[in-house]
Figure (tube, rainbow, N blue to C red):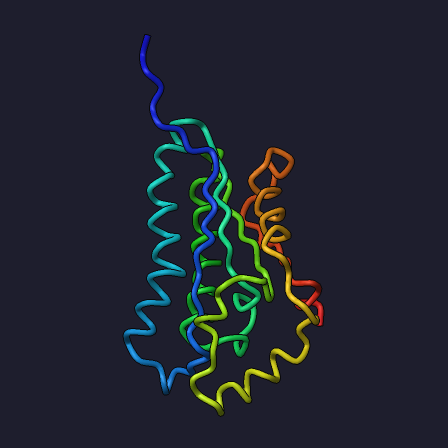
Length: 178
């Protein structure tokens, strides 16, 4: 009897850091590299690593946490917004190329969530934060709890969502509708 190989049915790409609302003209290379490494490159490498396992097992689900900032500028600094926009391209590219192999790739786009990401959200450029307040003004009061975002991730990963591929599920308390 042949031993079963490793199996991965679901990957949730959840890591993320902010960039202190730093606009492009003030952005240093270290901040750019750190934000891109955590928010984009990490998700790319993990997704790439599980693809052969999912292909071998005839499918799987990759769910990536992007952000409301994936749809708008001004909700964070340049590095964060760029990394989250790029995640959408990654999610949809995986959906396009690997969907025929039974691999689904979708994204959850939360607004504010009660996490420790605030440690990297403290504004460092006062005038940039004043501009960001315009975009943030329509944000619903309060923040989502992590388990609310986990429920959206879980749904996209489950069999009930078997026909959902390349989708962006906003979980932002209606912020995108404002």
